Image 1 (cartoon, rainbow, N blue to C red):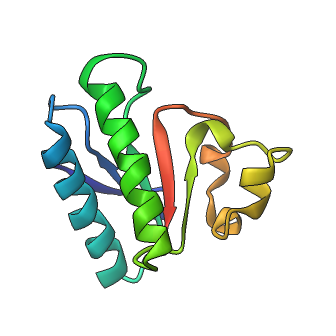
Image 2 (cartoon, helix red, strand yellow):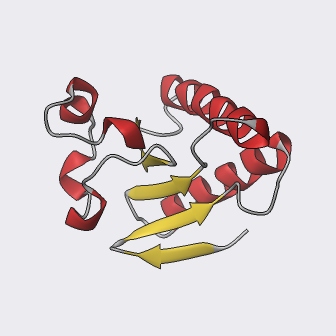
Amino acid sequence: MVILYLNNMYEVDIHSNKETVDVALYNLKIAINMAKKEKDRLLKVVVGYGSTGKTHKIKTSVIDILEEYKNNKFIKDYLLGENIDIFNVKYQNFKGKDMIPDKEKSPNKGIILIFV
């Protein structure tokens, strides 16, 4: 797993090396903890488009675990990349929307932004 610091936020790709769902979820948790430790508030997670194969399973599992993390207050909020649109209600309600770099302010089905 490679964690990069780009555009004033951490970025981690948890699907590029054909990871299993368990490995992807483990890497997600490590990335969230690292962002918290470094006191960064926004984490960009590349999950792939989720259309077929393992990518679909990873994206679905990540969304499920992020909902659990949010309910348990392990993270503050998350936003699916396809909802990055100023007219989208989910974008408008995203707690970390003011921290999204301009370069990332376009819909992208392959990412999830996490406000830690």
